[in-house]
Length: 287
Image (tube, rainbow, N blue to C red; front, side, top):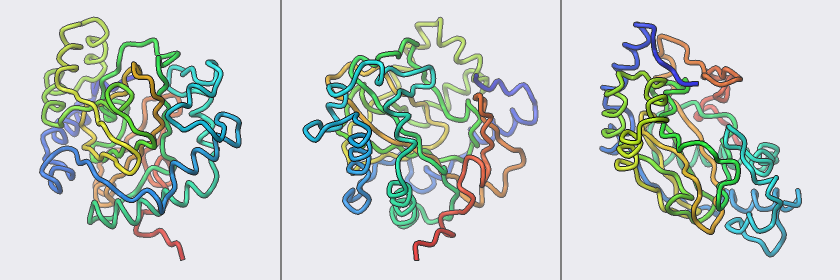
């Protein structure tokens, strides 16, 4: 389900946000930023590997890039939300990952990438992309998270735990091209997606303005929430595991004049103590 913004006041809020410069461009002069960090102190890949091994989804000889070789097809087949038995199991990962995730937010995102306090997604979203993408039987879904209810001031982060390129990576557009596309549909995302399903010309235009984020463990990308992005059907011979999360500046959260609610089944409330952790990053204490 996608937002159509039939409410005039809400439509005006979205239109004004689309015309704004945005925190990412204010900081980096662009709507996205590739960044590098030392993965060793956080051990994301190692913790995920150990977790999947404990559940029998990996063995000692199988790297994450060969995840598809160690599992039954049923465990790798995604549902309509893009999750499989394997990727869903990662939401049961232990406290070590969660604590390192919060340390990463404090030390890298707050300490190196942005100079403001922010709220952050409580639990990151895990994704597994398998060669052939079993269960992926829909047309590639070019979208912005704003279309499914996220606040306009959100900043997205995407981190791979494996080497990735082409269609086993994140596909994204520059924010200027993205905003132009949403503007063409007057920010009616429901209409955009209905048209995308049947209009090969629009589908081709989306393909022309997007590119893959070729990267590896220890790299990531942050981007403006207005950015068009998606995960394609994996036509490579390598599995990819990644996680993504979103932050919102405390100041921006406090200045919101409406409450943003997700369009999905759970109707997530994008507030501290809801989708976002109840404490901001500056309030985290690891003492």
